[in-house]
Structures are given as C-alpha cells and as structure tokens.
Image 1 (cartoon, rainbow, N blue to C red):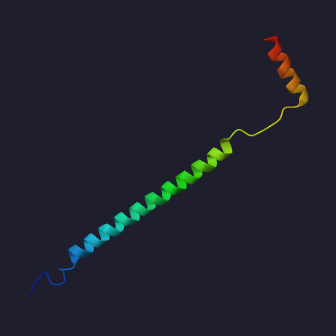
Image 2 (tube, rainbow, N blue to C red):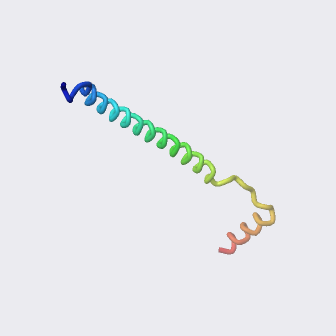
Image 3 (cartoon, rainbow, N blue to C red):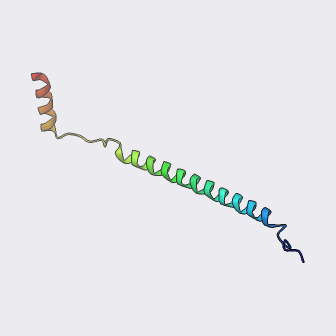
Length: 69
C-alpha cells in the first residue's frame, strides 16, 4: 500500500490557491485605490473656495481701507 496515494494533485492545488489569493489581494488593492481617488476628488470639490459677494457696505469699507494704505 502506498502512503502517497491521491497526493499528486496537492502541489497543483496549493499553487492554484496561492494564485487565487494573490488575485484577490490585487483586486482588493485596486478597488481601494479607486475608492480613495473618488473620495479625494469629492473632498477637493468640497474644499474649493465658494463664490460669494460682499454686502455693499463691506465692499465700500474695504475700498476705504485700501485707500488709507
């Protein structure tokens, strides 16, 4: 009786499992990179300086202050 019966496929299965794990890891890294890029783009859009207008009295005050300097 041979003790090694049925173990011919074992190294192949181990290699296939390692390749599957590596592919899974690369896929997760790629997805996290994409998610990070999207969140960074959204944050940059939110950080952009909003357009606003000053009240006419404040505008006049700024002009007056600029003239004094």
